[in-house]
Image 1: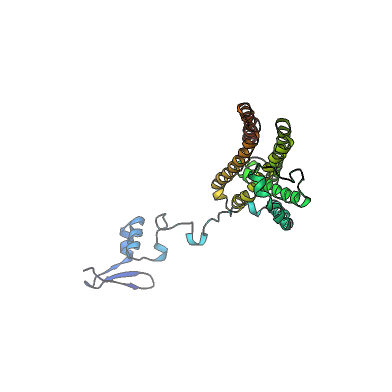
Image 2: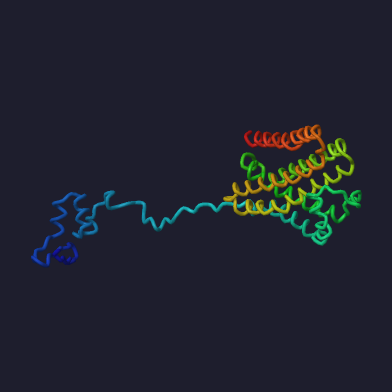
Length: 294
């Protein structure tokens, strides 16, 4: 059984009294017999000494102060891309354009499925889209360009390697997406009117616009997730890539049914795939990689 000890204090000395033996040991004798480090150990064990006699070595004294008074170093809060004023204004503006044309969607959706997949001739095929349908397509294409700019900015972060602001980076990439769309539209128009009839070319172009509208309606969800949860950016890029590939497959399959008549037409169709579907994407990817590495 451990002995109980009692400490008696006086003005100049502190005595340690053993209750079981009644013996007392003056702290002055303990301190004079032990060096400073031993006195520190005795002080930790309970053999107290005067405050002025306490050793001031590193084992018992620190100039750093109490650690709880210093607190923790505050890490800066990460800035999400969606909190950027310019990017938020760009996204909201695109959604407003879509919302303003919402009343025209009923008319547009009536022929959307047929434009997307069907190759059958219609009585009113030579009638152009109405003004309301053109506005719907234009607003959805603009939203597609903005969404594509957001996803491409995560894939090729131009603002991280230059002095360009995130807003200008997303805007520039959105303009690039719009330019690629315009290039495809012009190229498909030329190929359609050169290698097939006017009717088939018009069906093909409507299928292209319908596939872009379908992609726009799907890809804005991954774009918003990238803006407000960049940790899921890699997964959203994969989702966006899969959606793009599916939209291209739908459009290419419609083109195949329009152009394929015999073996020579199949050769022309393969040349079209290489010239308008594969090579432009490869060139764009190499240019983007070169710009982000320089």
